[in-house]
Length: 485
Ligand code: NAD
Image (cartoon, rainbow, N blue to C red; front, side, top):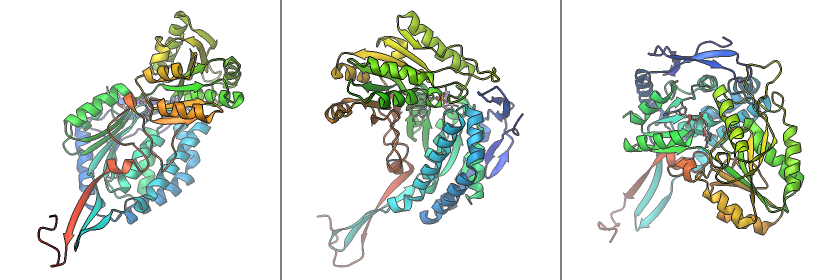
């Protein structure tokens, strides 16, 4: 085993789990055994909630300007340990070193935003009647939970940890059981940055722990990021227990390419969007709607796709199951009459024969009923659907149940505006294939890509992680008794 066995992190200490179930963690790059992590029991969760509850008593009362000092120091530590953290993400997730580095850089940006929270959460105050004032103050919610997926082992935990904790909450993090290593380093660095014990706790596990989080009476709010199937379960179960829940789900992002689009810029953006992180991004291009005559752009996309080399500038997919699923989608599309222009099936990387690789795949003449047009594939595959005009393209985009992102490629401002207004997605790109809003803008989709109100990052997350207190005060005798009348 390359790294030590992982334990839960509760009250600032590594705790052996109450479980006898463990999961081996293999690197998708080449199958190396990296570590093993507990599939924890409900007793582990009880201990974590107790630690978080105790820490909340003091942490929630620390002024926010002092709380964010921890995150200033944490940011410096992320910078100092950049290479080591990058290597860990690369190894446990399988994405390329450069992609893993971009993830740590994004974690730094998220932390910078948390450091700016004191500037953003000043309440309001107004004299509402003679001698009477109303004011608002933000209070933390309490013990909160963050359940995260495999595809961003550092960035997605950092979507929630800095903001939730800087705003005075204490947290239970439930990492993905297939990438549990980066979260442990996050906890270690936060401790080094001065975060008091018990403010962040980590419980490793699977479905059972997620369900226990949804049911636990000591947890006030849950944020979830993962597939739509599980997002719906968490949203329904957590809400039925009267918790605040924000659950981000899967995606099927459509890029609409118009004939006047800049050909080389469009081709490189489409290719980068569908193949970056091996297509395992909720913001990845999955379907391209080719509007009218765009064959010259499709030809260039194929040229660009062939420059994406598995094991060099294309990482591994997470597991054999994922590789098999992606390849099955391609084969199904082929048998239904679609044309495979670039085929990534049966990819083996020399020297990494135990890794899980799928090459970039371009499928043309996909029709809206095919499974590659309808379902999230989560691999480096782009399905090209032909449309005769912009309205047909919009109808195709609108018909998909997801709504994370959509993009348009054109040189026409008018056409772009027309699509921006009609696309049914929360994040829109214009000549941008991965339209992730940067801080302080917030991240979140629509439709089956998100359940709950508000977004998970940026200014919008403040409302999720806080409760607003409204105080009305009268100091002067001159104020009327029935001042509202
Ligand atoms: P997943 O839904 O399988 O797992 C997410 C979390 O839920 C993990 O911590 C896992 O342990 C837990 N889980 C899995 N099955 C469960 C079940 N039946 N009941 C309760 N908990 C369960 O997702 P994943 O495979 O880790 O990640 C990929 C998915 O996440 C994709 O669908 C992707 O689009 C989505 N994603 C969405 C966003 C977004 O912002 N919308 C961001 C990243 C990833």
